[in-house]
Image (cartoon, rainbow, N blue to C red; front, side):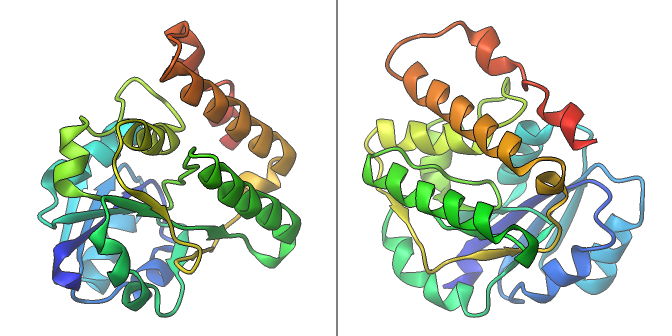
Length: 235
């Protein structure tokens, strides 16, 4: 069953963490890396995982990079993640029952320095899912390939929150989206949280709410196409 899964990650200067990401990845799954690095990230990927691995070069923004990876992937399931996380032990054994649906997503566990944020965010995911609003993270979400392309994939005009928008759209169109609390990824680098955990949470909540509302009431698209300072804060 694992041969049906393609793991897709965008990378940008991830040489410090990519080895730990790869170490948690089973040999049976396909890996598609869409790379925009100026460091040794692509060379490390090829060296550490020469089999069932594809490295594409692209300087596109994250939604376009994920879309490019999905188009190149060969698996029946597209599992989107990030290079600065590691799949928890047993992740790929526990995901098999979820392949009966159309899409699933799981939590991202922060490092010990940000346990409060971790608890709040993951409880928020559970609550949102109960309300029919899947709060998926691009670090840990999977979509059946045919479903992904049936809905058009990621919105290419979104500079951020393209992951949440895709899963909100899937649920809105009636696809079977499941929250998988037992399928966690573990953060290897909380650099975004170090720049302001509260700001990051408020940013995610506010934009997620607008994206959900936009599915029912058309909003000015400039509100959604601006990153609200997200990438500036990340530098």
